[in-house]
Length: 327
Image (cartoon, rainbow, N blue to C red; front, top):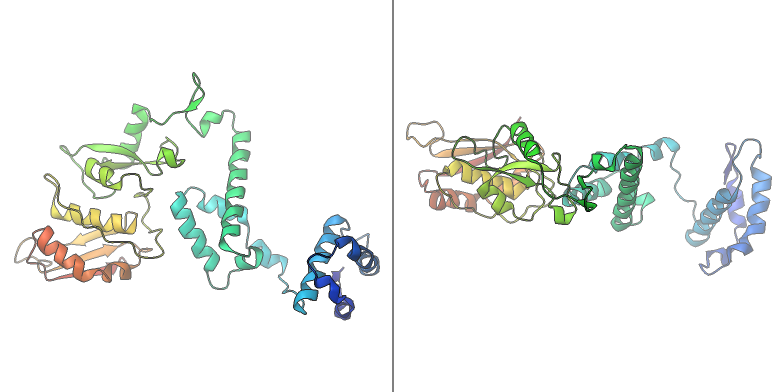
């Protein structure tokens, strides 16, 4: 027990064994706890109240059950684990991305999240509650709830369609280019896609929208994939789905779609290739991935990828595909 910087570990030996019984009424412990508070805590310097008594009961129960003092973590350590900061950091991600990021954070070696939350489900539930609290707080500060959602005042429902000016704003922001396969230019119809579908809780706003060509939008379907980010949310590799060339699109655009869908983000920085015999990358193509996308995921599919390029993309001159990260 600690009070005003003083700790008497000999008092731990005075904790009765019966305090390890989970069914023990805490009122039985109260007299002894109160006597320790009076003996070791200074009413002028320490905050004394129900919270202190409850904390001491928990500490004593731990010692009674485990026979050891719980590990001490300084306030400096605990300040590093601010759930509010984490909620603001990851709150803008899609739900699947949040789960990937939070699981990585929870299981990262040296982190103390497991000390504060016994399992990952408790951790993510606490995250959701904190994120909801932040949103409600921001809504309370907002002059109009419509700042966060598009509210149809006639029927009090959330709109699921963007306005034409908003759609144009998104296309302009994305340089009138499909963020998945990099297709652009006249003759390529661009569509606006909700990164997180509305039926999954996504908002019909500019931030939750991206520009995709018709084919990429169709293939993305109801999945929540953000092609505006360059770092994959995937902790483990997904199945490599091999897309076929559609219409007048090039083999390279189809290949980029295949890889970006595989990583669930805009992972491809560039593909170095040549369709001419005297070209530098004629027989060996090179796929450059942005940092944050594990190249081993794709390297493990390399033989499948080469066969796909040779047969499905009709580039039988390609003998190898190098997969590297952008330096």
